[in-house]
Amino acid sequence: MYKHSFMFLLLVVWWCVGCSGKGETSQETGTATAQETGKKAPTPMKNILFFGNSLTAGYGLNPSESFPSLIQKKIDSLGLNYKAINAGLSGETSAGGKNRIDWLLRQPVDVFVLELGANDGLRGIPPSETKKNLQAIVDKVRAKYPEAKLVMAGMEVPPSMGGKYAGEFRVIFRELANENNMALVPFLLEGVGGVQSLNQQDGVHPTAEGQKILANNVWQVLKGIL
Image (cartoon, rainbow, N blue to C red; front, side, top):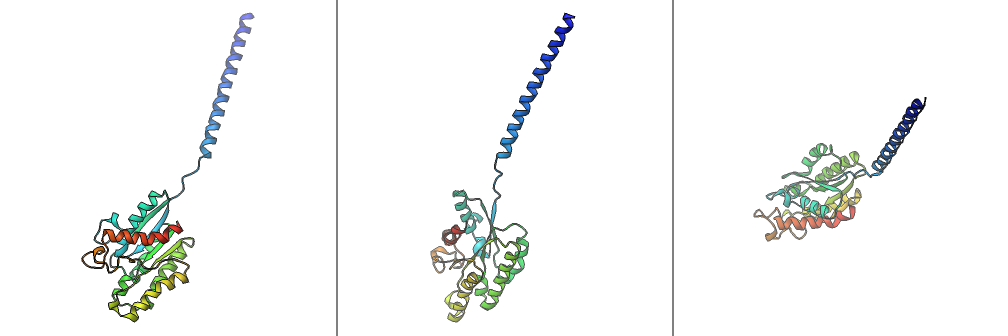
């Protein structure tokens, strides 16, 4: 009888200890889970789409020397959660851009920088037509991403195109910016256009040093948006 009682007591003690251990494990697991769920999920990366021609593409230079890439370096240095996407295409006109933009809008766009029109000007395309095409591009972006912030890069043509034409061309960018509540870079090539040392041999496309100035011109406007 004594032997049976002793064995029963051992079984009770063993069962209690086992239950206690399981309780602690469950509590620890619950605490760990609470800590894991309390962690903040990483903030999604936001996209800045630079949509333009050879000036955006960085024609004749290493891709890392284009002004969108230089702006990305600035963004990284400030710890901002944005990714610069260079969608520049050499030779692009406003009409070409209107046809190409749909494909690029398949990816999320949080900030849209529009740099087109220079090739229109060099070809003597009526400013009214250029403005119509640029407006169509803006409308497509707004329709797909209504919350996206928009930036217009202003452009000018050489005086050789004629004073009347140059004046009509210059004003369309400011008009579009005002009519669409877009931030405006008054003249993308400010400080670079017409400066021989800052342009490649063709006299049209900026050198690496010239692209740095373009990046600064854009950044002065873009930084307030980011």
